[in-house]
Image (cartoon, rainbow, N blue to C red; front, top):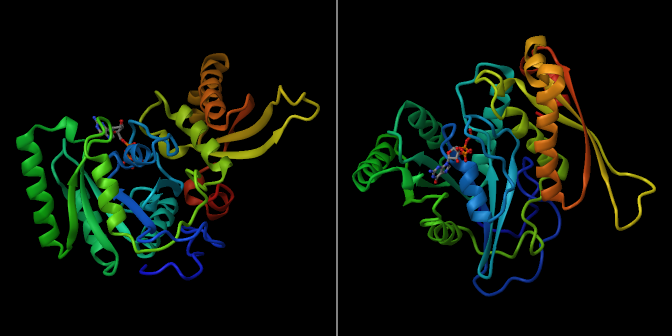
Amino acid sequence: MSEHDRDFDVSGVAPAGPVYGTRPEGFRSGFASFVGRPNAGKSTLTNALVGSKIVITSSKPQTTRTVVRGIVHRADGQLILVDTPGLHRPRTLLGERLNDLVTTTWAEVDVVAVCFPANEKVGPGDRFIVNELAKVRRTTKIAIATKTDLATPEQLAEHLVSIAELGRETDTEWAEIVPVSAVSGDQVQLLADLLLALMPEGPPLYPDGDLTDAPEEAIVAEFIREAALEGVRDELPHSIAVLIEEMNPREGRPADKPLLDIHANLYVERDSQKGIIIGHKGSRLRDVGKAARLQIEAFLGTPVYLDLHVKIAKDWQRDPRQLRKLGF
Ligand SMILES: Nc1nc2c(ncn2[C@@H]2O[C@H](COP(=O)(O)OP(=O)(O)OP(=O)(O)O)[C@@H](O)[C@H]2O)c(=O)[nH]1
């Protein structure tokens, strides 16, 4: 995208409607998307740039499903980060939908940043992604060596060479290759500078102070999913989806003692999974509910009553109707 003088209603990535504020001289604004194999550190980097926990992170791969934006506000520009799900060789209908979402996003953003964790070798998973990305010719691409705190200087040097090499092999021109650590904060500001420099000149696209325009419900659902994923077996993550049925302030509460009622359903695919989530006499579900509630309360800044139910949606990942219902 080269200019911002048009409507930004494309594929759910960009906001429609008004632009905010006037354009200071030299102000830049635009969209960047982090991609990379599962666990590459995309969500953590988004949070480090935005400076607040917006996108959930987890030590388990493939936890990111929803496109959630983080917004970096600076005096000289506004950077809107689009966090996409990882690209995978599709095995289910959900996989295909997610991949479509990913490639659509790539074509619409100003910059795609590929994350390569510095503590792991560049491998087939990375090659698959960069090859797919190479088909989107017009978008500017940068490479980020993530998690540099976990690599020795020698490893990092070798890693940067491999990234450059992969660029040549796939005919991808990296506009930048940047090493960062989201955990130590090393080079995070530099990355923000470089990303902003690649954005077109344009006015702010969001009101000052907004960190994300993802609907609150989507973020709340992600907090619940995050809590439910904690400590469960590896095959379970793909099988969990959360749908917020209702989110309303409790009526009749005094103004200084508000309470937000949230009714949510947690969907799994099989009876056995339901048992795992609920735990002995419901103990695990209670812990999940409490952990999620604390996160939600911190995020929304209000006391919450969370009513959480586990339901079975058989094979939801393969069923178009269920997928639609769950927002995919
Ligand atoms: N030491 C270190 N760990 C990191 C860094 N960035 C991310 N991690 C860890 O790596 C794991 C994966 O990070 P995420 O940010 O969830 O990775 P992701 O690419 O968003 O993962 P998916 O959603 O699965 O695609 C988490 O345990 C993070 O804490 C970093 O800079 N340094």
